Each structure stands twice: as C-alpha cells, then as structure tokens.
Image 1 (cartoon, rainbow, N blue to C red):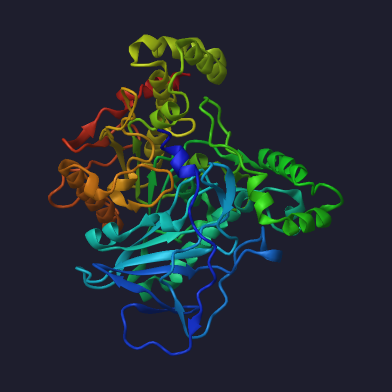
Image 2 (cartoon, one colour):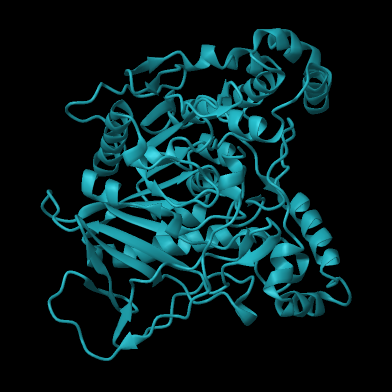
Amino acid sequence: MLRRLAALTAVVTATLTVVPAATSAPPDADPTVVRTDAGYVRGVADDDVVRFSGVPYAAPPTGDRRWTAPRPPRPWPGVRDATAPTVSCPQVGYDEEFDPILVGAEDCLYVDVVAPARPRHDGRLPVVVWLHGGNLASGAAAEFDGARLASGGDVVVVTVNYRLGALGFLSAGAFDAEGTTSGNYGLLDQAEALRWVRRNAAAFGGDPRRVTLAGQSAGARSVCTHLASPGSRRLFQQAIVQSGACANPVMEKADADHKGAEAIRTLGCDAGGAHAVAECLRAAPVSELVLKLARPGPPVTAERHEDPWGPVAGTPYLPRQPIDAIRRGSAAGIPLLVGSTHDEMRGIVLGRQPDLTAEGYETAVHTGFGADAPRVLAEYPVGDFATPAVALATVLTDWGGGIGSCPVLETAQTAARRAPVYAYELLEDSEQFEGEVSYGAYHGWDLPFLWDTAIPLSQYPDLADMTAPQRRLSRAMIGYWTAFAHRGDPNRAGLPRWARARPGSASVLGLDSDSIGRTPFAADHRCGFWDSL
C-alpha cells in the first residue's frame, strides 16, 4: 500500500536511449515539423495535440561539463526525431526484487512539448512550463502528459528534465574554486529551459511573453526559488505552486557545503587540492554518484532540512531565502496560484507507519517539536483521531515544515502584498485506504486531475477510472489553471468565483467534486496555533 511520496521519489522506468538521428531532408509545410534555434525537430500528431519529445534545451552535462552551468545545445543538421520517450536524468530505480539500481542517463537535458492541434484562440497561445516533483532526486518530464491541459485549455505545455540528486545539487568548495558558486545546478537547468522557451515558444505556437512556471512538490519548491532569484526575473510572467511552500526555508551555503563534504568523503574523492577533488568527482561513475549518495525520502519527523539535496541559499542564484526575497519584492507583479491538498502527509505516514502506537506518536512529537511538544500534544490529543498515525499525519500536515498547510497560507499572504494571488485547497477524498483509514486528499492527489501521469509505483487513477463527479472536478481545475495561464486570473465563465487572497485574509478556494467554494483553511489547519509557537 505504499504510495504517495514513495511514488514521487522512486523509480523512473526510463531506458537508456541513443540520441535520435537527424535526417538530411529539409521539412515541408508540416505541423509536426518545427524549427528551433538549434535545428528542426519532427514530432507526431496525436488526437487533439501535436507532441515533441526529447527536444534538447542544453548541451549534455557530461565529462568536463558535469557540475557546470548549462550551455545551449549544439545545432544539428537536418530534422531531428522527436517522437521517442525522453530519457530521465540519473536517479535510483528498483529491480524486480526491489533492489536499488541506476536508471536514466546524464545526457538528459531535454523538454517535451505538447501543443493543441486545432487552437481555439487566434494568435500565439500561453505557455505552461512544468517542473516535476520527486524530492529533487527522482522524476522526469515524460511522467507528465500535458495533452488534457493543452487541448482543454488551449495552451502549449512544456515539461522539463533537470539534474537531480548530487548531480543537480552538490555544493563543494572544489567547484567554487573554479569561479562559480556550486549547489544549484538543477535550478540553473530549469532557468536555462525557461530561456529556451523564450527563444523557441513561438515556433510551437506559444507566446514567449505569456509563460507560466508551474510545479508540484519539489517542482513547487523550485518555482519558489525562481520567484526569489535575480537570475530568473523576466523569464516567466505567472507562477503556479502546488504542494510546496515558499515560506519553508532551504539550505544555507554552509550547510550545503557540509553535506557536500560528506558526499565527497563517501566517494573517496577528498584527497588533494581543489583541482584533484574536482577531477575525481568528474571521473566517478554515474552509478556511484547516484547509488552511493542516495538517501531515502524525507523522514516522518518534524525536522526541517532533512532532504540530502536541494536549493542552496546564500548564493548568486539565490541570495536570500525565498520567502524573504518575496517579502522584499522579488516576485512583485507576478500573479501566483498557490495551494495544497487537505491531507498532505497522511499517505506518507500511513504508508510508512500504519501501526504507529499512541506511545510512538508522543515520541515522534517530542522528537520533532522539543519544548513545544506538550502544547502540540494538548492541541492534537491522540484520542481525537482514528489512529495514532492519522494524528501524526494531521500534526505534520498542519505544521507544514516539510510539506503541508500553514506555510502555504503564509506564502499566499506574503506574496499578496505585491501581486495578485489565488489560493486553493484540494478537498476531494481519494477513497484509497490503509486498512479502514482513508488516505484522504494525500500529497500528489491533485496530479491526476490535471495530468495523465506515468509515475512508477504510483496508484493514481486514470481519468477513465474516476467517478463522473471527479471528472467534472478535473475539467473545472483544468479550466481554472489554464484561465490563469491566459490572463493571470483563474476565473472564467461557468465556474464558481475564485476570490483573490489578501495579505491579512485567509480566502482559500476549496476544490471538491461535491462543491467548489471558499473553505475555512486557517481554522481547519489551526494556523493560529502554529503561528503562536
């Protein structure tokens, strides 16, 4: 029954593929052939959309380019095939015995593009650029099929691969000595993909002046860094943050360097000066970099900064913590759609600790909250919940220091001081169970309402398996999300009014197949209590 984050942080069943060959003939007038700034690509028409898979947005980050900033791709002659599935970036996968294996390849900086075959709007269409989740250690562009968004909302959808794990986020003095600041390579990849979109959106029917950067979980955390980064300004005009709060802090450079030093020792590359260390790291087999430096998903505790790899603040890319930068105006004027699911942590806790005892619950709270534990236990007595596991999941969801609720509200209210903000919560119960306990609206449950997903080990339903009310909710969410991409405002005819969030208010739209309307988010998640700690 293990689902949720395990699904998001586990394998991508990508196969190592050979770079598609280019043909020599120039293209005729063909909607499946597009000229990018590096050369022609040939996609495929599929029902209501045209798809292009595996389009390079940067040169392969291999050899001497491992742990360097991304560079534009080398031009190719003829027409490049863009119909094969996109290979994932290197990450941990699992074999049939569930033993860890390497999947993916370092030559992975590609995007997938889906565009409507018959646009309903004249002129160029808005572009939605999607950053996948996966704890910044797993996931791939190919896991998300944007056809429903593209055809249902008349938008061009671009899904992005970016470097993961140590390859994407290793912070090391050996690389700093080369004249750059290490630690945010995966985020630099995302910014390079946005530059590629700015140069090439028009070729796919998109408008480079109407780009919405969107992401879920680790992808949402990434969007927060771009809202805060001086280097990402003007690369997108709107943002969507799903189940990731800009109010949650990221690692500072000193902490990231400490983790990097531990990794370098693990690889046996800590001898000699900076040049020798860098050479050793770049010569290390990719399997060692992934398998030796892998960690499990975030533990079910109330500790911050548990992720082994992630964004690094105190760097030129990210000088300040995201929420501090947003408070100072880094995202001024950028409309934001932000929200979460009602039971973010329930799937994670039930999947890992379904038989948690009352004593185990108290121990977990004391371990996580220290001196504040008695107040937390008094606010969330175990007897008020179906099981101790549900009690712990509710505490962690409401607190939201990893993923959860109250920091999402803080993000919305902070950003609303300088830009239009629309906050939501997915309330729809998944009706998936661990024993007799429902997972509720768990972390990731929003994804199948917007995308056709192919996330390994997940049990997200296909659209065809949803109930008729859930399919209506899916259409409503696609309507809201794509209206936001068109105008920076999710409201559209035929859908309930979505009020803007305000700096001092808690206006949150509840999304449920029975009804859509304002929900008492702050009260439900006891955000006043968490603010008092």
